[in-house]
Image 1 (tube, one colour):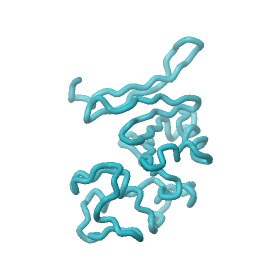
Image 2 (cartoon, rainbow, N blue to C red):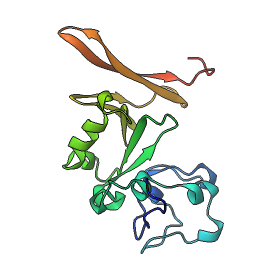
Image 3 (cartoon, rainbow, N blue to C red):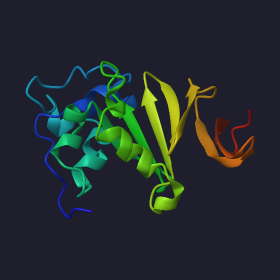
Image 4 (cartoon, one colour):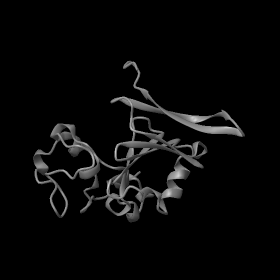
Length: 174
């Protein structure tokens, strides 16, 4: 991990792909406050979520310039579970994460034997995919507004098979 984050420069993919509840901004639409050459038109007064946000590229030392979100076509987020990474894809480039060198690295992160990361979620146009080293499970749209993903491996035909499903967050019921 870097002691100082990399500069965003002209990258504004987070301003497009993430929703900003404080500003009433939906995911997948460029924020109306974004400036054409990068940055925020109300930088000093921007929503707290924006001020606090840092994508993984800005602080992950091994991710070079090719992983900068506007170059890659997606951004990487850590999730509340530190073993989980979220790939949030630009809706105008829905297959960007499948290009190399990204796809093979994302599959490698999804291998529970790697230690640090054991689950990778890909979000494209609101849909969620769970990536495994040798497979992907497309869960589609969440069936609950506040959900978590359960995934792993279970015994099936021919040995261990990946599984994934949505479940409501604890305490919210079905």
